[in-house]
Length: 262
Image 1 (cartoon, helix red, strand yellow):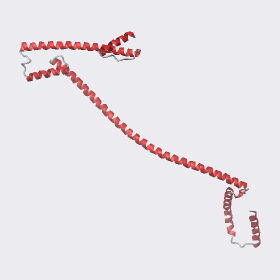
Image 2: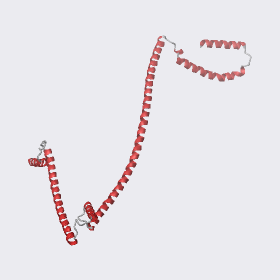
Image 3: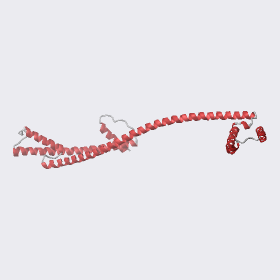
Image 4: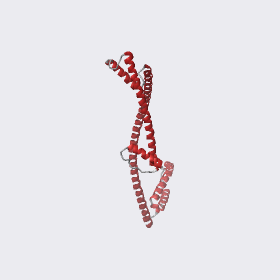
């Protein structure tokens, strides 16, 4: 813990330089995190130093090779940078720029061709990836269109369902109100019937004149009328005969007695 804390403090002092190091809570977690950051920073600084040294060496090599080529051109051919025409100087500058863009060591054809081939391969891969992305994009657009259509249909279904639910809720509420009214009315009628029955019972009403008894008597009368029909048909041939006064008198007396008994 103390060793890590000392390393963290030295690293923070190096990072902030003349500025004061911000205060932080010293605990195991913060010290471990800062120690990891210090190690990562030192590793990156070491890699950067190595890369810088390599670039310096390459720059020195390029300068030496350039000086050698200038000497060859000057001593062997008698050409110098100042003796070149402007178009030639422009061509040389363009050639150098292309070499720098391609990242080749020199401007020879043997260096340019592999670099161009690599760029061509990268271009073909990029075009292939672009076509793949276009296909995926078209597929995504189709799925997006289908999803939007489905979303619109769902919204319409939800809207219709909400309206239908509102109508059904109104109908159910109306039915509940009607049911409450009918229930209250039925209770009221039942109470009235009970009071009426109690009132009739207190008055010793004859049950033979109740509605139920009258309905039953009416049904019996209707049945008797149906039974009398065939008897009337049997008596029709005798209706034209002259009546016997004594027998008629007897029948009249029987009918009077039956009427009195009824």
